[in-house]
Image 1 (cartoon, one colour):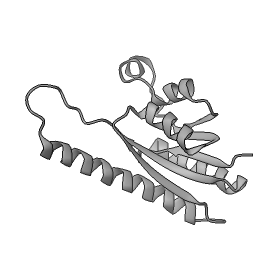
Image 2 (cartoon, rainbow, N blue to C red; image 1 turned 180 degrees about the vertical axis):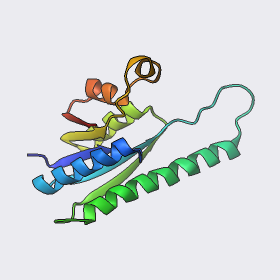
Image 3 (cartoon, rainbow, N blue to C red; image 1 turned 30 degrees about the horizontal axis):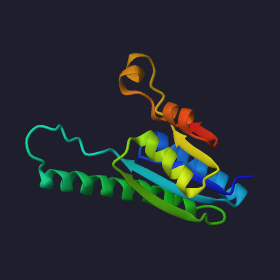
Length: 146
């Protein structure tokens, strides 16, 4: 049924659970799997000069975190049954939800799998929900795992 699954990962426990689900689905359907990590845009405040060292350190940390998140998914892809074909992507300079939706469209994914932190109440209102935004913006089905 599914030929190409996009997994949104951030290295959290919620995305680790989603990764297990995505790898299982990819294995069951013989689908390709693309794991995407969206690095938040550099928090430039617009006051004073841009510090290139700060930007470089920020991006280096984001790339390292993405590599760790992708390594967790790669381990799942090689464990157990048949190996799952995995591609990894690092998307920069866009909001998380937009980066996930744009990558799903660009990669031709037919399913997006992602975790939810399960926040509610005022915390959800203050922080927003990436999963909610992806569900609202995506043109392909979205599986949200808790």
